[in-house]
Length: 219
Image 1 (tube, one colour):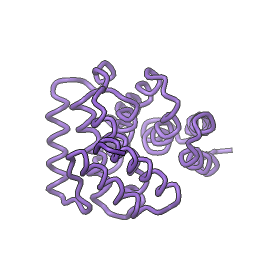
Image 2: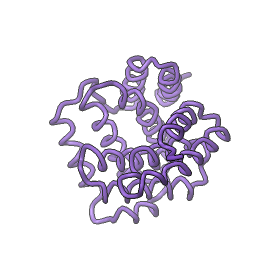
Image 3: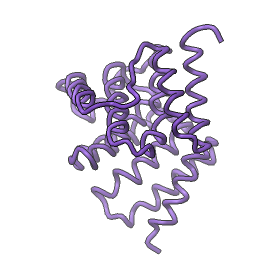
Image 4: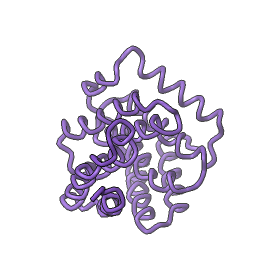
């Protein structure tokens, strides 16, 4: 491993491995180190001011585009941006489960800022799914959150990306879908996520989908 991008790619894999093993603190630290190699500052303890800056960055980078128009954004080609998006994606479970009230929203907003700046990639679809989750919950706009969730699913389908399908479907099903559709309709989405997890080998999100499929199945 020679370049900073290559080192960051290794840390992205490590971030995911730590999360799968339940070592959430180590997962967060590995991601922060990887992002630093790419010139992206990610504070271990973001403040409310940090979050407000990212909210404004999202608004600025969206500009006059509608949510649905983001499906036509150009593809990301820069290797450093792709690895940065991957690092931010892999830190998601650890940030969500960390218990820190500000780490998770900062992560999501930072991911969306990069997505809006640079365009479409498999990781971009996941970023928009998590933004839908944040909008439905903490930001209190479930109608807009549903649009971003549907965008994420449509983008994953458009890219024909099986590698990340399980996680995109899980976040949409568990955290977005039921804000706008009856909770009893969640089961088919979880089953799609389970199938995608089997196909891709994404055992972490396969397990999440299987667990919540059992919990939320109305039968």
